[in-house]
Image (tube, rainbow, N blue to C red):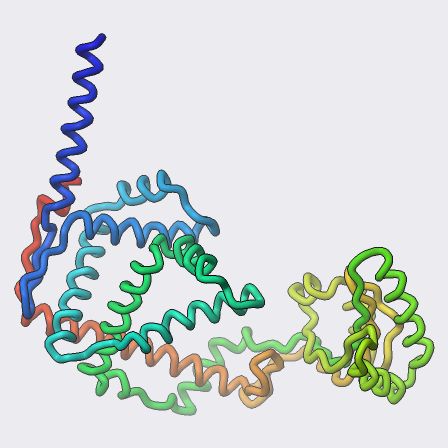
Amino acid sequence: MKKLVIFILLLAITVTSVFAQLDLQPVAIVQLTRSEPIMVRQMRAQMETLVWQNLVNNLGRVPTSAEVSRAVQSMSLEDRQQVLDVMINERLAMQAAERDRVTVTENELNQIINEFRNQMAQSMGRQPTDSEFALTIRNQTGLELNAFRDQMRRQAITEKYLMHRKSDVISSGQAPSEDTVRREYRILRSDFIQPETIRFDMIQVPFTDAASQTRARALANQLSQEIGTDPSRFDAAVLRSHVPNSGYMAGDFGFLPLNSQARQIAGDEFLDVAFSMRQGEVSRIIEGPQSFYIIKITQNHDFRPLGLDDIVLDTRGIVTVRQVITEGLLIRQQQALIARATQELVMELRAEASIQIMENNLSNW
């Protein structure tokens, strides 16, 4: 038994040693301005990062180390080759950018990082702490904050160099013709439907518990009695909401389309009352889970298909179907131009460079 245990331990040590030695082997050597190896451990780390991010998107949660390891091991030789190609292309771009003195300053990098912080702040309703931000980056990308900054720096330099070398291609787009816009509209026409929609002003009396609910109900009843069905009295009550300690909020709450999302947000009772009213009418008290409401309808829009020059009613403001379609066409065109510019640059850099791939180190791990 003792000999068996010793044999198993020696075997484990040998296997670990073999993997450690393989991690220190190059899987490729790239040379444009200097010789730069891509080690197996670097490629493995890149694959783990890609797998982590893919699992986060698919699972909707932070993956376990075992899940990441299994997914990495299941990647085919073709998958590995694609990852290696991306790593080679990035190193060629970084060497070329260094040669042509294209850099990203710390201030530019901080602006990029701050965009992520601001997005997080919007979802949280406040600025995240440094530890909260670092943890979110770790959970979403699988990277520690310093590694994430380094990744963002490389990505920013690559994008800046692409613009440096291929600005003529990227900026060669043209506004779509009228025929193109109309053809796109015919294809997407079924997507441009205006649901039955209202715009309304609302008085909202909030509450948090049973005691505050009783007080809120009394205030809502008082306001409802004062207003009745008179739109002008409703408007006067809206103005009084700005007085300190009024106990309620009021104002224009924008457009509300009649759809399943509105049901989730507002509830059936609110929709039943709101969409039974016409412009200028004032509602009875509507009780919600955390507020009492009184609304006045300011606009009614019937269900109908939208034409090219009709206005799309949503949070983007006043835009027409034509503008939405034109913007979509321009985005697709820009994406195609960037893809073309990227492909051209990669081909040019690879033609200049020396690239050696160690096939055995790519496949045997």
